[in-house]
Image (cartoon, rainbow, N blue to C red):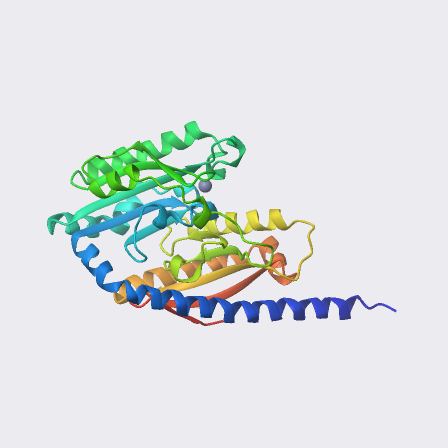
Length: 320
Ligand SMILES: [Zn+2]
């Protein structure tokens, strides 16, 4: 007798149960984190009245704690996370140029942190987007830095590197006018324990987060890649992220799929929300049309959870 049909039905059931539990669990995490966000809202408003902060970084899960390392509050920075932290200067300007110029005109400090990552002691565990080649990475980040400094001479634009072995941030090319960064670098703390340390098996969630509210959903112990809603190359970057996950899962049958959390941000600016939603939907639709990726979803190696986050409160909702 052939029992394989029953067996796979049971497995599909277990995967479905896992995703249902996961939705409940991340929903509870979001309640906790949005409550925390509301508690520090007065301080956040004070900081935002004084400073505008942008962070460009890699989707690598080891960069997930970058805002903590830069001592930025939840919601303080606009984060653009892409594969390698790569972004064309024209795309960056199209997305953020108006906001940057407006911030400078309003005499707010304006800081742009370009953060590359490497791992001291293990050159193989550098940034995959640059084939773990630090020279190529430095060239790309330096070119982006120079371009953005020319466009926004009054903003403080920095090229920093994060050592994912120690959690330390080092200045590659820093603008000394930025007193926040100077303070961060002078009080450099080793944040490995809170940032990259993994908990025991069963407590570490693994996956990919797409959206602009990473810190409202992803806990410090989680191993989640991060892609921003407005990533100009979101389709290609998402496919790369999913393939990375599939490669890691090869030949290991599990009832605990990698989670892809697709989280549409709801901004007070309706047009911005629409742009985010369109960019995300297009990328996800293209990714799941890829036969290899579709097969991985069908056989339960990856599972999709859809949410929305109201950015003003950081409160989120599961939508599918
Ligand atoms: Zn990387």
